[in-house]
Image 1 (tube, rainbow, N blue to C red):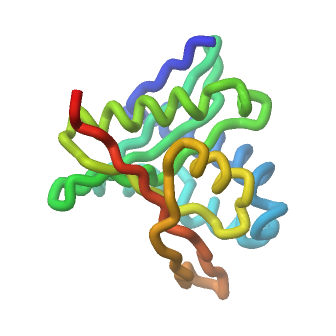
Image 2 (image 1 turned 45 degrees about the vertical axis):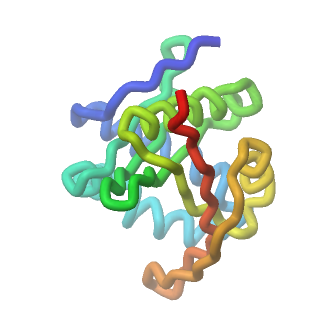
Length: 170
């Protein structure tokens, strides 16, 4: 299976990300955080205008395509001062999971780290997202901290920080 990862540039790309977010988040996160928090987060953080603002603020969004179909997206944030990259978002539709797409995305992220001279990639993951936490651990990520952050309207992000060191010895 060939995985194509392309930088989000156009309004059409942004609309595609927002559509994917709605579909994937409703499927994946509703059982974990509930329908009302999913809707709140989609409305405030993963709509077209929010995504445009995040891109303007330096977040790189990428669309993931397999066999001509957009099946996921990711977001990367560069921290040039600390030489770390934040994997801000990595979402893949259920039918495409467990087929190596996530590993292809992670390989892409690690290559972006190396290209930037960064020593690690880090992310946040919901503490109750057990399968995803296990997936990251199998790929060399370790839990380094935890945070509970108020995101408004009585909702919280209750997350672990996970990090993976990237070898720059090539």
